[in-house]
Image 1 (cartoon, rainbow, N blue to C red):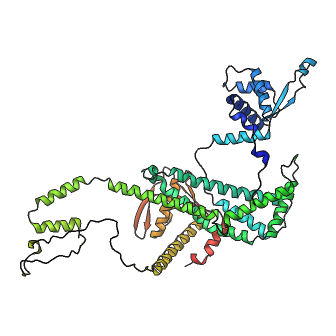
Image 2 (image 1 turned 180 degrees about the vertical axis):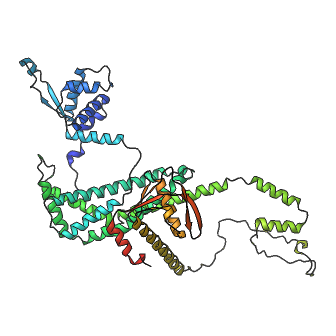
Image 3 (image 1 turned 30 degrees about the vertical axis):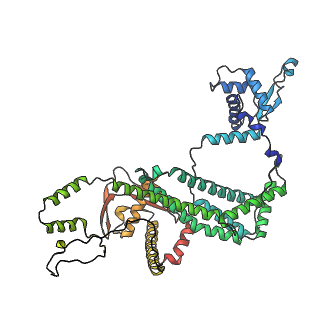
Length: 512
């Protein structure tokens, strides 16, 4: 059940008036200065302090202290500021009766200024795809399931804050990143030559996230289904009790309202990962959006390659070929040259009345009288009905391809495990490698070079980094299918999640 909105929040918000008022620049300058002083722990300020701070920015050359006081009173009437009488500095009764005030920015206005400050830093959608947040969510859900209500004081609140922050960050940053790809991958970009430089890094980044999503989402979904209502209610009750142990001057919600809010957030978490009976989960939609982005990038790359091939001028070659044909006097040699250049033309079977002038087999077909045949124009309109063909079963072929891919994947994992045991290794120290291992090494080099930190993280949770110095010499990588000369890079391998890497190695599919 959705939370009913507060009727007070549906009305006019006076605290937002200063953003679009007539003297908006003066009001916003005052609010910005008070917000910056609030962050420096300077709370109550006198008008003179505020005026001097604003004048240091050189925004209003003709601004006076009296105008500043009028603006401060206006902001107080809009509930952006709170004022109190400043009688400590008064020496005489007349000074005390002048009602000098100090001003403090209100909590509502602090959030408005924070929001406006965040808007200044927005440059596109931003976002990122961080599989580590999935690990954090899975670990906390596992602890909730295993502990079953047996927690230390204030442990529940810390677990809940970590869990929900990781979930919010995962949702917001992933959605923003996919949106940025959809917005930035326009038709002009997808056909630009510069896009090829980023294609490998983007597709690798998306593929690693999709693989981590597929592997870790099942754990999270399983933990959520194994957590019963009693375990959930016990955990949420402990979170509420831990929250109420923190001394606060005022709680915006009652204890029961806060508990109901936590239950709604938990249900939203379950819906995001597990979905509902009549709808797909947000996790599945995110996976599909990531795959669609990969497909769009690959298609864009193919279009760039096709455009490059189509723009290559073959004028000189065709001119040379035409002169060659023109210089041949024998028709048989011209036929042979045509066969070498163009190959065999596709055959077409045409029906007609045979009107041969002679039955002699020695007469060449080139001397026969041509048969006129009217050819129907080609169009997309279906003029005649054809019988439907049966669906071809490619099950055997698919199974064969699947086994080949699994075998290749196993060899890649075995090579990666061998590299992890060595931790640090130069290319010159690798010895003779297979073609699969060579492709794997070159893929690591390409992806690391595309990264700003020369570091990547594979879908198995392995961190790979390459190093080389300017005086590093070239080396020869010996492969089964040849030799390759390249820079003698140094590789370092680091396991980020040991338990997950062990689970991958123990799987039946990863063993020969």
